[in-house]
Length: 149
Image (spheres, rainbow, N blue to C red):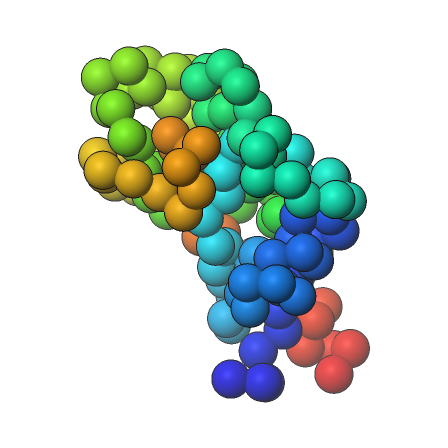
């Protein structure tokens, strides 16, 4: 759907678009739909899968949440304050659950979102243990984008 505005943030996002044929976010009406964000350094210019993901599990989760913020703002949104839907994918829910909850509270202190928490066998890279995807409601940003077109 070439009529939808898509976004690939600098670093990992651009690399993924060029090499893996997907973007990090797409605007659909008043929504920003994000692809799954992992615990990679989103600003990394050279992608090396050997050290792509943060080495400590809790750092990996923290980085994934930060990448959501980077992604939403790159798509001209305001960040976590507009998130209404969250899906998390964990290779070990028991060890990750409480840290995910802490991050949800940290990044959304003023509101709640719907959340689906899934346990999975594996993710897109053997080094990944956590992934998160979100949708955000951005009526104001969508109106600005329509005026530009």
